Image (cartoon, rainbow over all chains, first blue to last red; front, side, top):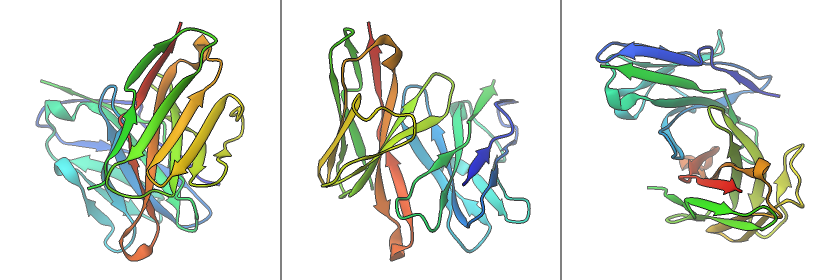
Length: 115
Length: 119
């Protein structure tokens, strides 16, 4: 079985400051990793994904994440945030061996960007 | 791109009535779609996996007779909440599965969600 833990439920940060949203996972099998963003009353939008290869993954809106296999982490970072980045962020994993592509989500982190 | 739509975006119904929510993949075919439920300030809870041409697979604790899923075509899955009650009020989100390039694994594309309020 897999589980995903997002260590911070809320992250307040000032505009133009850097931010890191933490994600750790537990799995007995290899997984793909994803970060999604959800704006109020909307569905989820894919920010980035790690499938294989380079452990540093770049996504949309200036976000990037680094896969650390030894620490089973996939932390999301942005060097300078904007007010428009205020949203809910979800980390998710999907077992590589899965024949359904089922996603297991973390609890979510609310990023609050202050002016 | 890969666009998924949901209809309606919001619906209010009276207790005891049934409500149908549609999920469509607009520019790709999806043999598998997923239905999630999300409570305020919480994560997505997978309700069921919808498979085209066959019965849906429900997660433990989800009443299959209450949440009827039909996946009649490669671009459409429907979720019907039967005999809705106020506790069914929630945000329902669907996603459609698309194969990743190279045929290795899958990616999910999400609809915008449907806000259901049962009075």
